[in-house]
Image (cartoon, rainbow, N blue to C red):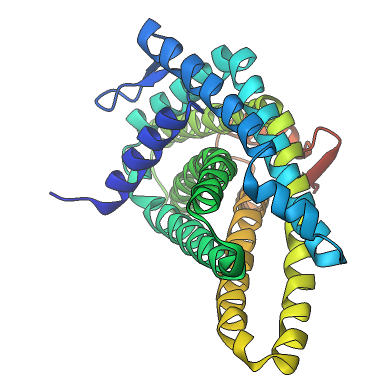
Length: 366
């Protein structure tokens, strides 16, 4: 059966391999990652080619035109955006090499969790689809807008330079998509754990209300305790994986945050300038329409990315609220069951930290 989301994920994977962002292979049948000589050699060659392109772009006709023509704020701002993007791409590609073993361990751990709960693959379809669409439309309109703005001084070599520039800066979106997909996986597993926790809570309340033999009650309490402990172990693994992801993508998160900040400020400024220019030059109305579309899709992509961070904190808080409801149960169910709830709730009340830029953190406190 055709699954468009699986096709999207495979395209992202092969595109990441093509650009040299991934320097290892992933087996689609098992979901396991491994280092191979073929993947390492190709990624090294791809990175060398990309770095060579960065040097060529710095001396290209496009950059010379931009530097020579730059005389007002928005033109310098345009240069700052692309310089920042290219610098961040360089730092990210280098960091992928020394973080490779940790990244492989992280992916393999998520694959093991997904193998245990295959229904998780159906839960993140919508979020993967909207993320890919927002990236696609944002980049398409950005490329078209650049080509239209430079059409008066456009040459074949400049057009090639522009397309090359956006192919390189597309690496940023690939990097963001990797972080995004890991957080989506953690979020969906949290949702499944909350469903399991609700089921345990319902079963415990029904057991509390039903009279029965002590042996039967103890047997059912033992089963519920095992389920609760299994949920607690999986939640601890997810929290460790999330913190491991924050450490692995530390430098990359710093780069992405810098790009997002500069791009958001520049987008707001370009939008204001675009409307003012349109008033003076009606022929620029098509540029303004492209700028409006690019702005809408760009901010949609930013909101989708940021929401992906906060939803993990939300489901963590939901789990805390569910555990609080266990305190309303009768204290005579089972001592082991009560100890498991008390211990897990005490551990879960610790802060959940999602580190951004190594120093900036999103924190869930109870």
